[in-house]
Length: 462
Image 1 (spheres, rainbow, N blue to C red):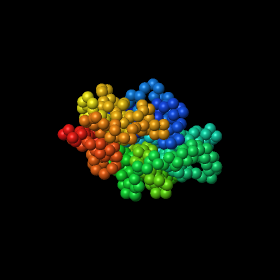
Image 2 (image 1 turned 135 degrees about the vertical axis):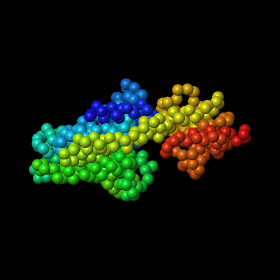
Image 3 (image 1 turned 30 degrees about the vertical axis):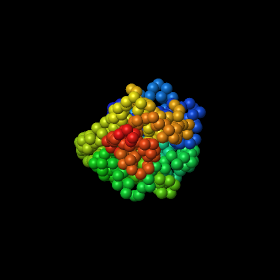
Image 4 (image 1 turned 45 degrees about the vertical axis):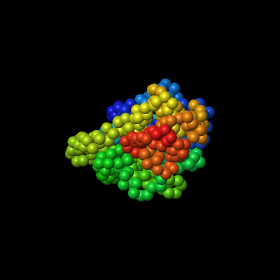
């Protein structure tokens, strides 16, 4: 199952083009150690462990497939531990069905072919529950050390992955409490450090709007990557909680039912609480760590069907596969990550003397990665290296002066046509217009936010 899940994730690695977050990974990982430290002091400090890993990984290349391979491997690791955890909690059948369901989730296809740390976080979380089960089942020093290491990995993969850890407390009981608390305290130290760093850099997520409880209605879709599949599996997963609760001959059945339920539902509840008490931070991708719980609990439910567990497992896998087909196809399209730079490059038909202006400086990295022919002159760029404290590039501030003598300028921005042409949400567009240009052609890629490519010509010559 580990190979099947990893292969399913890897199958989409070369289809969808890299998006801005993945290009940020390249930017961070390609810097010197000193440069990476400088970046972490200003932005994305909580991603530093992942960036350090990728710093060495990209020395072998930066192709789409190579960049995304570690995430596919992490998905395979998560699936292997799901099988083992399912066996421990209920039966091998439960683990196999759960891992199979995990492998067919469109969200797994997305984050398993995504050069960010979300697949790592999911694998670390499954590992932590597996390690906790071993430690609770037969307490011993080495097993608690393994659990502490697993907790540390959870903390290092993504800051908000720690929102699953309160679910572990359902297993706390007299005789284990001190050892469990010690392992959590030591393993949680990275979260304390990265949390302090992240709080100091909360300006980096200032773009996140405040959310209300209504976002919980979208949670099943987020975890599964498809609405119908997500609702189905969430309902079945709740049945899986009941199966664990009623497990006979397992004194920990009730505690593990609560722990697994907490794994599934606590992260979205706690993330919304963080959003309202600290800073807006509710973003769907931060909750991918719940996807293994969704699949595992559904697997337990099917394995608990009297007399027909195998047909039930096969049926839900087949139905789930059918419900997720269109979403699997979507994430494997060229625009599957919603930043279709190759499409934008095809729209730009440069003539000699044309200029290009980027609505967001960091878009320059994507065009630099994918451009295989002459681009319009990048008249605002003031340096070849990204800024040391971010992912943008140093630029000239006087747009009118930079466009002096130019007749045509291509303007590219992230967002809809209206976001650039109306209001001041993309200041560069307004600066180009005030320099004496007006739009003659505007095209937007499919899906949102997408990219917009506009051709502007000088007014006096039209």
